[in-house]
Image 1 (cartoon, one colour):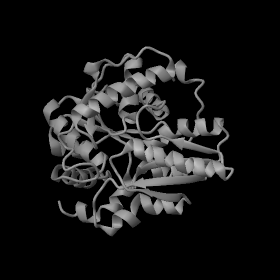
Image 2 (cartoon, one colour):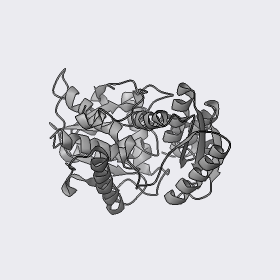
Image 3 (cartoon, rainbow, N blue to C red):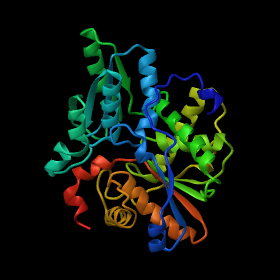
Image 4 (cartoon, rainbow, N blue to C red):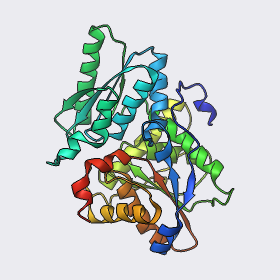
Length: 338
């Protein structure tokens, strides 16, 4: 662990280290670079995912503030929201979640199955926000709800969405970077020529890149845009890297040239699957029994397949499986179109 992280409050929630696994059938089918997977879908809490690592630091801060209620905002099928509700339940805290309208769909499964079903099972109090592209407004409304709860005597802690806040969640992926470095080069696991990861809020992509560069590891990190165009997302990751450095009181080890963002597989937009994504989801399932979702990991796998072909045989590429499995059940119609 970076020494700068030692005094940051943290609650252990994730089952780590997560495995690094080779995908021989998928590799043979693609015929390019060796495809490996970092199984952060197996972090253990309520069907797992990358957000468990991030929430360790947010709930550490909540505990340090003696909070008894945690609030968070996200998309209707947000994995972050589901796992915040799970962490709150496990730690004996109340949880209020705000679901934003980011995806226009008439499919009833989107509003009743997947993560929404789990939010309700986990006991979260659910609020709605009508705009899916207004991070500042969504944050402002969740803070208003927090103030209303405080007026009722609750001790509320808000997990923010928009940039401009200390990026506590990114610290979880600094730890993951160290984990990958420790696992690589031993027990038959290679050194990787490239890592491919979803790039949305920026905490996973930014934290992973920051951690690798802080450890003086120069492997390229290929960020797959799942919500914004590549140029906008690149600026977001650069800013996130600066925010991490400020939070930890250290020099930012990330250079502008380190930040790679790719929106080739983004269309038609957040939470909507394209043909390449649907085919990647089916191929991963049918070659490796690897379950990935249409919002994040399906697009990352589509890009991983393309990059594996471009890198060619003899190279090794690492697909970051950030979870999202419950989302499969919210998109039955879209997934069956392939």
